[in-house]
Image (cartoon, rainbow over all chains, first blue to last red; front, side, top):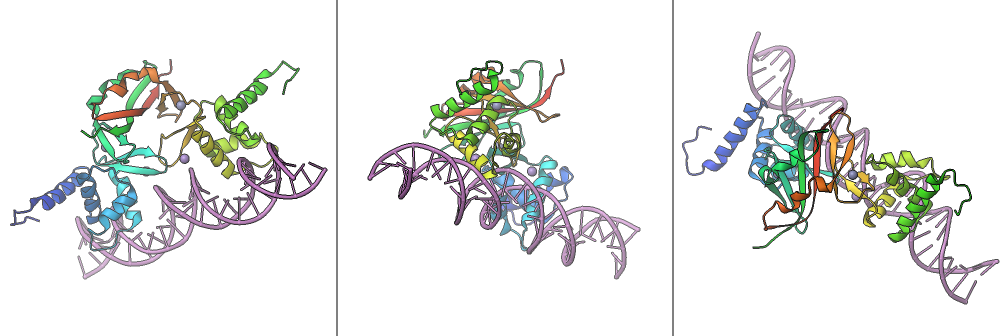
Length: 147
Length: 147
DNA sequence: TCATGTATTTAGAATAAGTCTAAGTTGAGA
DNA sequence: TCTCAACTTAGACTTATTCTAAATACATGA
Ligand SMILES: [Mn+2]
Ligand SMILES: [Mn+2]
Ligand SMILES: [Zn+2]
Ligand SMILES: [Zn+2]
């Protein structure tokens, strides 16, 4: 890029950072992968594969195939760039927030919010020593108070 | 039933109790439903629909169809007799333990163990008051210590 | 008893998420 | 420029689940 125009760094910056992120994880930053990673990095909506496909297909000059979306999501997951989130039967959601965190599902709207790990920190230690806990995932269901 | 033979009350008792359970929840206890509910009540393995079908189809004099297994599982779920458990993408597991509890997935064996709710009791209160928590589900991943 | 209506079950078709295949495209390096 | 491996593509395939339409069972009332 090395762009002289500094008025809108946002897009270029995001592309650079998605690209850098992929490079840093050993994933070749193809246009398809960059555009998908970039989309996941800038949303907090925990989209499904289909939602990624619709959101992103217009951003490429060529057709984006479903196979590439799934390939890319699996590649990014294996590289630790994104995580899968299971909140309901039958569909996997994707999350570029790879820090240890949890989720709150608003049962009215379906919205899925991130809950920082430190809010529920203690859970990993609660089981007896017959369990060696590698990790855990908390899914809260409820409503957001409208304050 | 009102059986004079007391040497093996187990089977008859279980059938009676599955039957009573269904009746108490307003579900007509057809042979298919009783046999499926009974199987779920006596296992702690959190089976999938296919596992229920294989486990149970021999127990009926007639063929048991996939559609009936799914219909029954959904009926039992809607009646509060069983719960769905999501531990992995793409398949739903079923659990006749409808008490509030959590799960431990042994990453070596795939075994899914119940964790009583009182072990992680406090979690429901940890979020701020902008969240009205109706319920939550913790999924632990790890290994069972072989003591 | 018989008729009839409703609930249930059945086999197989349909759907939908995800994976696979086989054929093209790309692009880094010889 | 040539080559080859990596990547992408369209569409076929698989698998879990739901739907459909026809058969069965069963309760109720004439
Ligand atoms: Mn996956
Ligand atoms: Mn379901
Ligand atoms: Zn998240
Ligand atoms: Zn359980």
